[in-house]
Each structure stands twice: as structure tokens, then as C-alpha cells.
Amino acid sequence: MNSSSNLIDALFIFVLAGFIGFEVIRRVSPLLHTPLMSLTNALDAIAVVGAIVLVGEHKSQLAAIFGFIAVVAATSNIVGGFLITDRMLKMFKSSRPATKQ
Amino acid sequence: MSAEFAGGQVIIELLYLVASVLFILSLKWMSSPTTARHGIWAGEVGMVLAIVGTLLRKGLHDYHLIAIALVLGAIIGVPLGRVAMTAVPQRTALSHAFGALCVTLVGSAEFYLRAPAISRFMMSVLSVEVILGGLTVTGSLMAAGKLQEILPQRPLTYKGQNLVNFLLLAVALVIAVTLVLHPERQSLFPFMVLLALVFGVLLIIPIGGADMPTVISLLNGYAGLSASAMGFVLDSKLLIIAGALDGSSGLILSIIMSKAMNRSFTNVLFGAFGQVQTSAVAGEVKPVRSATPEEAAAILSGANRVIIVPGYGMAVAQAQHKVRELYDGLTKRGVDVKFAIHPVAGRMPGHMNVLLAEADIPYDRLVEMDEINGDFPQTDVALVIGANDVTNPAARSDTSSPIYGMPILDVDKAHTVMVIKRSMNPGFAGIDNPLYYLDNTLMLFGDAKAFVGNIVRELGGVHS
Image (cartoon, rainbow over all chains, first blue to last red):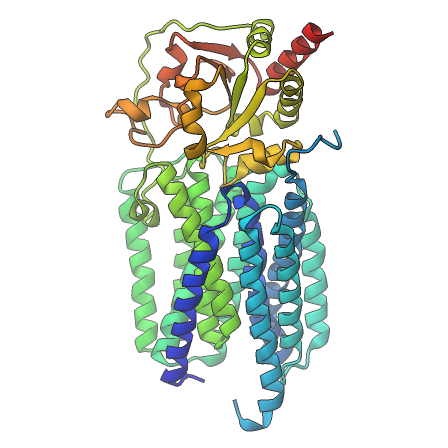
């Protein structure tokens, strides 16, 4: 797993993903910068996968406890992040007659 | 990865691949409000696939504990997804802290599971992961505390602050290098994490409210980069990609924010923002012209084009719904009303857009600074609600001003400028605003929500 070819692969992925990130995010309308941030926050909580493995493998007490807290923290970001992004995006309406107070 | 796992492993990796693609699409669809909600759908599906893929991994046995943690996280997440729109900046800061906490804890656990049998490269990345993660945890908590006004919003500065911060970070890096060379010295590891945590606190202490949009973006970027570093440690391509996307998003937003405040990006990166501007406000009282709600209503109803400039003051006064009533009242009279949005108005990127959208103001009426600045000379009334520095003409002309060079909204070029403000006290940064003393400026003294409400009532009175 620690062979240098794997590390080089990982670096390639990192750099290319960074480029895609820059190109995609540059095109996001400034109108949506707040929901963008809450969405990337939710997506970033994919770190939960690493934490799930720690808890599931339960290799040591410390790893399980740290993993448990990490899963809780990341899951709250996933749930909260998607929820609030959805709420925000629902509010953005185009210029049609206002529907509700 | 031995060959016997290959079959299951391939399926899991393919699930991760699909999740990565969905994450990229999710961000791509955020480019426009019409497609943005597909983005959430893509993100959610990607997330579920990734979690399912992870649960399929061999070697997991404690599913009970995983389930409890997932449920507990969801229970905490729901109220965090339901906070009021005015509390979104502090919620965002808090979620940066949670994300970074996850990364830091996983990194620490991985260290103790692997050390001392840990390669130099792996230890380097792991150090990056926990240092970036650690400082983001406490830095974000500090930012959230300041935004929630649990902590004092004023920047706290002291002599040699940058030196102290620099030394602290340097010591953390020295420990990191030592661990890279001698991973058997495990007792050093907690000190590295501790220093990162303390550094995060000290980094945010000198930050004032007006710098929050940059700081929140930067912490977003740090959280993403630390997650990417975690991807290297765990050999997870999905994590590397998601972290890189989040990191680049945070960095792009901080670049946009720092440009909008005329600060160099390196200035932002090294945390040298937030120096208190102690420009002594001279005691001399310059004359200003003020107006009552009746007068303001009369001028507004006689106008053809009005541009409303919202700022943090509108958010604090929770005036956005009254502003919507004003928008409705004026639009009904055939007045063309637009909103001018400065990139750093408010406390986080896009803050004003969200508040105004919440108040049901159509998003096509919200215009970015570069697009609307040319319209001010043909505008009858520019109505400034709770914005200060972003309208300060000194940024264009006065080279001695602390905000000289910052791009501003050219409200002073409108025929009439009306500024709703509590009093003549200088704003947060303590910078005097020459806009208030111009001949074409009318000061409307009072609480933003109450004053706009009064204007709306006056407009209604004229109407009926």
C-alpha cells in the first residue's frame, strides 16, 4: 500500500482533482456561494468512510473511540449540510409573481 | 491488497468511482440556481454509495457501534440543518470544525495504530493532516463563537502576535519533522496536535467580524486539504478527490474574498489580516443632512430606478423581510428596484443573497458589484441598508485610508444616496465614511428594520 507508485498515483489524482475543482467552482455563480460552501462541507464529510473503518475494525480501544466521535461529527455534517443546502436552494426563486409571504 | 479480496475490492472501488463522479457533477450543477438542486441529489446519492461501499469492506465487524454513531450523528445533524438563515455563518464555521475534528481524530488513531512502522512519506502526510485539521477545529470554533457573539467580535491584538503564532507553528513543524525521522518517539505526537489546536485559537483571536468572509473560506479550504491528506494516509482516492474539491472551493472563495477587500492572497494565507485600524476618528463634527421616513418615502416613490445596497447591518437587524415589503411596494409603483451585492457584504460569501432569497426577493434582482457599478450614475436613489466600508468612496481616492484600493459599490454616483444607520458612530473598522457628508447624501437614522418598516407604511399611505 505504501509503494512509491501508489503515492505517485495519489499525487496525480490530487492534482487533477484540484484542477477540476478550480474549473468547476470558478463557474459557480456568486449568488450561490453560501450554499456552495454548505454543500462542499457535506461532501467533505466523506471523511466518514475512514472513521467507519476505524470503528468497524475496532483494532484498539483508542481507535474505536476516536473513530466513533469522528463518525458522529462527520455524519452530522452530512445530514446537516445537505438539509440546509436544500433549504437555501429552495429559496432562490426567479422573477415571477411572489407566491407566499 | 491481496488477490483474494480482488473481486469485492473492485466493486467497492467502482462504487467510490461513481461517488467521485457524482461529487464533481454535484458541484458543476451549482453553477446556476436552476440546476443547483440536482447537485444536492447527486451529492446525496454519491454519499450513500460511498458509505455502502465502505460498509461492504472486509474486516469490519463492529457494525453495532457504527450504526449507533451514524444515528447519533444524524440526530445532531438535523437541528444543524434547520438553523435560521441569519445563523448560517456560524453554522458553517461550526461544521468546518466538525469536519476537521473527524479528520484529526482519524489521523491520530491511524498514527497510534501504525507507529512506529510508518514510512517517512506517510508520516509527513499524516502530520499535514493533523496539523491542518487541528488548527481548523479550534480556529473554526473560535470563528463560530465570534459570529454567535459568544466571544468578543472585536479583534484582539497584542505586540509580537505574529511572532508568537509563527514560533508556535514552527515548533509544531519541528515536532512533525522529528516524528518523520523518528516515528518511534510516539510521546511527541500529542504535543504536535496540541500545538496545532492552540495555533488555531491564536490565529482567529486577531480577526474582526468584517474579515469573517475570508476567514470562513480559508478554514473551508484547510478542512478540505486536511481531508485530502487523510486520503493519502488511508490510500483512498475518493477522499483525495473530495478533499481536493473542497480545498479548491475554499481557496477560490478566499481568493475572491481577499480580492474584494484588496488584500493579497499571501496576506490572507499567513493570517496577517484583521489588524486593528486605529485611525483616530477626529473629534470634529461635520454636518450631515438627515431625513424622516416620510421624506424618504416621498423621494423613493418619485424615483424611476432604485438600487438597494444591503450589508451586515441588515442581517443584524433582521430587516430582510421589511426590505422585501419595500421592494414590493416600490415595484408596484413601477419603480425599477435592484440589489447591489458586494462580495464581502455580510459575514460569509454569498450571505446577502441567501438572506434576500429567504425574503422571497427574486434572484435575478440581485446583481454583483462589477455588473451594477455602471448603473449608479443613471440611478435616482441608492439606498444603503447597514453597509459601510463597501460603499466608502475613500477606498477610491484617499491613499491614506486603510481600505484604499478596495473595490467598492459606487453609490455616491447616484443622484440621491440614502443611508440607514443607527448613529454617526464609525463602523466596525472605525473608518470614517466620507459618503455621509456628501451633498447628495441623506442620512436616515434608526434601526434598519424599524426604519424600512416606516418607509413602507408611508408608501402605503401615499398609495391609498
